[in-house]
Image 1 (cartoon, helix red, strand yellow):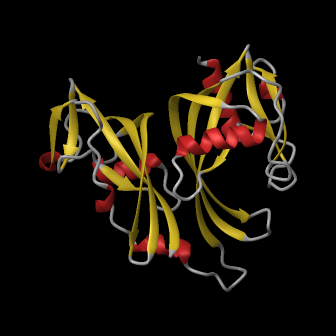
Image 2: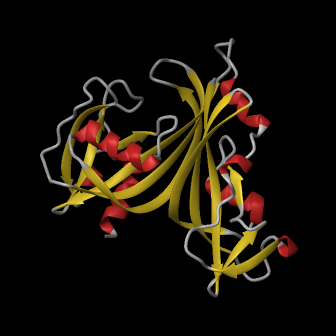
Length: 269
């Protein structure tokens, strides 16, 4: 049975204490290959919708048509100007407790998703790949926890946030705790969700494979259960060094994009 991981974006638009629902659930869309979460939301609610903070992360797993489907559900705050939105298809209901999400088994398989399972026989044709990852913004005593990318990555020597890929069937928050421990030797606790971002490009993987790559990244805030000197436990992987970097020095060490954003979030604390 082939594993297939995908991301569903759910839009939480609140106006005067009332929540927009379509068919008794938050408006939602599967994140298409190469798409940003904002573009997915606008497919459902129109071009005037805006997205804000990440409110909730859930996941579900089921089998369907020979596939082992792992769907990660992301709930994002949204703004929707008066007069915009789904018109008569939607209704506004009082905000309750849990977010009303569409049932996982109703998130149908989009035929376009199967392209990620198709073998590529021509080296000139890129492999279509979507990768979901989760990274942690960890601050202690005025310093940000950073990891250095190893020679096994496309950006050796540059610094990023601790975290990494979400394994098939793994909850993203479980993944980030595991990754931080592997990369820094520290146990952490996720304290808050931050945001979701995406990047799309074509390039060579560290193995030399040409990829049409869609990176989907969740950022969270976390705190160490005990502040320690970082030690890389997963030797030979994507990280070759980890350290605490003072916030006023972090911008000068050579950060990748996700770490630049993490530094901004760290300074907003």
